[in-house]
Length: 253
Image 1 (cartoon, rainbow, N blue to C red):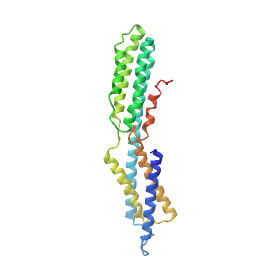
Image 2: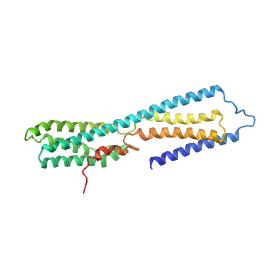
Image 3: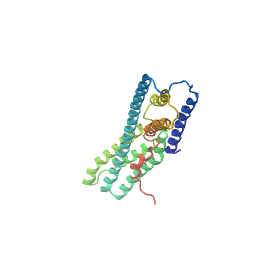
Image 4: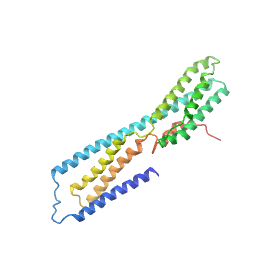
């Protein structure tokens, strides 16, 4: 299901629930109930709960955003290291260049086509990618430099392969949800409490009050959706994070 549809349905459901409860509560209000004033202590409590929940939501958004950025940087480093290997092979004979570049292409295709869907679904990743990367390292390691240029490129090539391997391990360690379950429980429960406190302010069913209640509810849903969308670095909306690796792929004819 597209993310925009998930957000739209969630917003409509929550806003409809808030409006429905407000209208039902208005019908059940006794005629002698004084709704002109709200006790100061209630206003203070609502303000404090709203501020605390806003801080928690802000920290959650910042945390998942930082985790998504770190994951993107890791993928960029992996792609850059493989690109450097591909470029530095120019000093080697054509047959050896084609052999190593073929292994790089196979590794990238496996990463994009097989590992990324598994990471998006938080499923185990097999060892095929590690074997393909080891094949690149083995080809370079067992190729004795034939001249001065190859000797100068030999160690930097191995360093770039090691950098790609390190980035790959960091990428796999970043799979899964950034926020623990207890944090999600607090965010969702806090959202219900914050929205529920609207009714302690003796909200009526006037157009202005219902509009403000709906807008506030939609804002809370949007912020929770934002946290959920960025929670898993390679899940939900993280498919585009593989673009740096896709750019390395050799176009097929």
